[in-house]
Image (tube, rainbow, N blue to C red; front, top):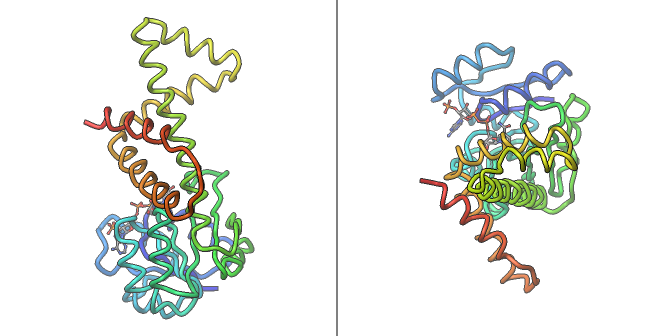
Length: 257
Ligand SMILES: NC(=O)c1ccc[n+]([C@@H]2O[C@H](COP(=O)([O-])OP(=O)(O)OC[C@H]3O[C@@H](n4cnc5c(N)ncnc54)[C@H](OP(=O)(O)O)[C@@H]3O)[C@@H](O)[C@H]2O)c1
């Protein structure tokens, strides 16, 4: 089993380590990559092939794990010529996933990493007609879960999970801002911890800190999600309310500068 990675950052190196330990052959190409990525590649026992074209022709599974803004370009250039399955693991919207599927065709599998890649609980959700071919990687130590045969379902689940987590973060930010104004912030943390458990205090503090630090990115992510959901609502004729999502977006918008 030959696995090729386009992009060799945190995701690819974490997955490679497991795959190699379990007997897979892993390849990438350092062509045109930064010194940091080149060094990461040379520190791993993987094959560094001459070009991404060669990687695409020679991999049974080609994995795109680089940056969301390049995902479509990479699908066009390499997904199309891939010998085997093309799996996209970038954080992209269901809309973009559909576009990539149209570009690559039958061999495309929609993938979504649920959780931080190096956490022991992380899972890779996959969907699409050929997703069972990715599930083979469970024999090589990965934690893959097939969601459905429909392209876009893995990305949609990831998006909905992100709606939930961002909603909780926005709610924490707003509630504790009010408590701070009333000089009751610490007391509120302790009060909620009575029912939620001791972990509530460190986990919610870390959530608030992280959300404020990355509020610009969070705002953009919620904006993209809303764009998708508004379009989906219109096209499907289904009825659901997006007012709360708008409020979540506004929470991050206010904090983004
Ligand atoms: N880390 C996570 O836990 C996690 C979880 C879920 C989803 N994701 C998604 O997975 C993807 C990869 O994340 P990461 O954490 O591995 O990112 P990362 O550590 O920043 O690594 C990105 C890698 O992609 C390379 N790259 C950038 N542009 C490229 C191009 N045009 N062609 C080929 N390679 C290119 C970079 O090379 P250079 O050094 O040369 O720029 C680098 O090796 C992202 O889309 C991210 O949103 C990550």
